[in-house]
Image 1 (cartoon, rainbow, N blue to C red):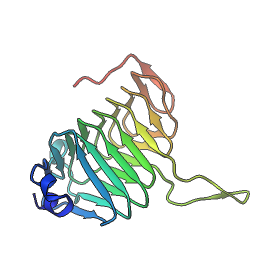
Image 2: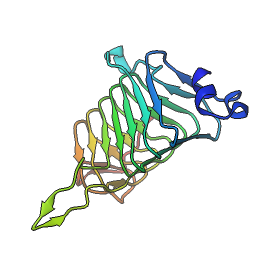
Image 3: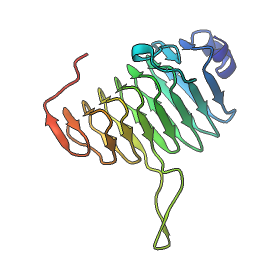
Image 4: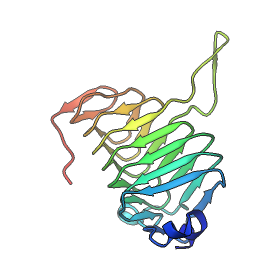
Length: 201
């Protein structure tokens, strides 16, 4: 409730469904925007993650004039770092679940469609951190990421800038994804590994 009263208008704070663990570090710039849409319960740092193996602090930080939109129920487990900065935008669909010790780092834009599932230790990074010069020409070091509905990112996977994953994509354990996938219902690690596979909840 203290979080809601601090960061939302009073009329919204009274009905805000946000639960944040007391050890979670929260920072929201006075120029940043955060919106909770669509109802549902939002938990940040409350769920211990699978097997309870994580021991790190959860961080939820929105810097500069960035924006975060959470569209319905959402669970961000302990040890996860969410940093949105510069003019970045993070959009999270309903039914989102993020296991322990994930890193979601947004400089430009990251979109999770409804019912995205992240295993523990997943990193989603839409930037290289800085530009590089090739033959004197500066590269584009920030590109948006779009994760489709019902995607499952296996534990310890990394999603890099510019990646779009079609709905129902399963990314296997430990994969580093730098290419987009436009086919639904596949196991994908920069090439199709298996078709007609869906997540069984």
